[in-house]
Length: 252
View 1 (cartoon, rainbow, N blue to C red):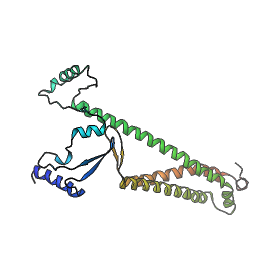
View 2: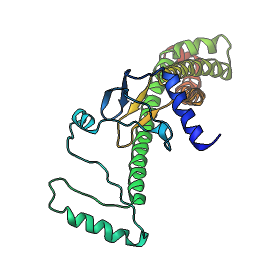
View 3: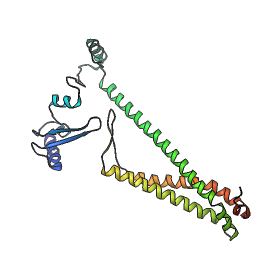
View 4: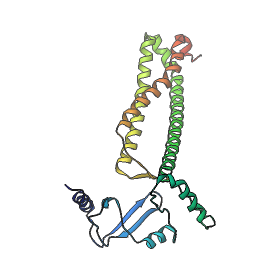
């Protein structure tokens, strides 16, 4: 299939997928500007990357976005890359007293600035994620610890009935880890299906789309098991170390 035929196939496939036809009203969703409505007046074939572009009325779009008479980008092709610094400085000098600030940079610098912003956003997400994980760990561990301390008398009764420390630790840890895993999997499945069936976009300079990942469910399982184990092991060891009589009287 030639490149032109391949491009035309992509356009036709896109139209067939959504059932679009002339004079249909469609709504494009933007992470920055919300929903923008358009009416299909024509379909373009035979252009390079035609399936990736929408041709529209510029004054109408500027009116919707509240930026009438403004241009976001102007691309200039230079014959010699070594002249780019001078071209950029000349353009900025030409529009120095213009009401709107003009910045002239190379395409490489522009892409690097976008990548830096995306990296900053991803770092912020990681920091927020770790804060959420640590807070969840402290909260769950505290709840498990309180539950085990409240059952110190029960642990003492089990010791009196002949249960070994190892048996008691395995029983209680199994319970705490099981509860933690159940909660972790439930939360991970809810998050997975929300991102799988709903479009979640984070507005930014370059909008970030949140996609579902089944591996997150397995990560949640492992992390939940770790939280349940660490949250229960230390207060449980303190309880089983008590003498049965002290445990029954809830001393320690």
